[in-house]
Length: 209
Image 1 (spheres, helix red, strand yellow):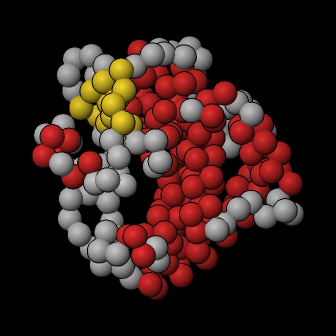
Image 2 (cartoon, rainbow, N blue to C red):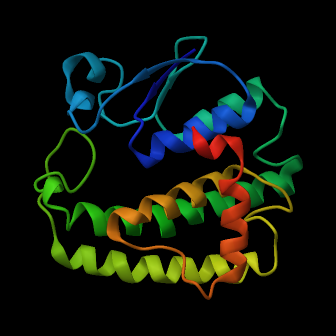
Image 3 (cartoon, rainbow, N blue to C red):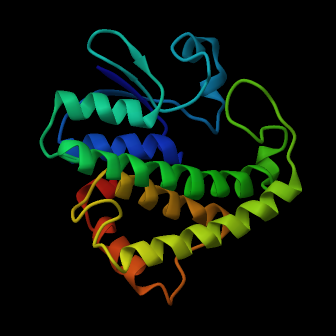
């Protein structure tokens, strides 16, 4: 296996945390998005979409989406289980992981890519250039607040996001919350359940990779 990483980007960090939780060693190559290395012909020969992370499987298949990477590693290394056990748990993990992606990651990306001066002309990842839309940045900031409120409500009823134990969904939500610092957003002080959950996830060794 070969893992293409970027040490500064949130989506590769999700895969990196998953790998660390599994306790497996995978050959890794770091691709600098800041230097535009994802757009080079060499990397686009691996992933024409010019996005990270990428996992090249033992059979040589190229996986470019976090859920696919997680599923492959879960099948290859089932312990500890991070995507649930049985159909009910697996469905819960994928459900909350999708919520974290769509209602957590997307708003942060909208706010950041449509407001940061370094993202001018690069409002979307990938090989094509797109102009910034300031209104999307404003909408993204509002949506981040709604996402944090939803997390607090959920975590008041459950110790972890999807299950009664740590899972892929917690990795995704944690990484997106930490990445929200790029738009100067953090967990509100009154969100006690979320802060407790965040502290427990932050203390895990995988959070330091």
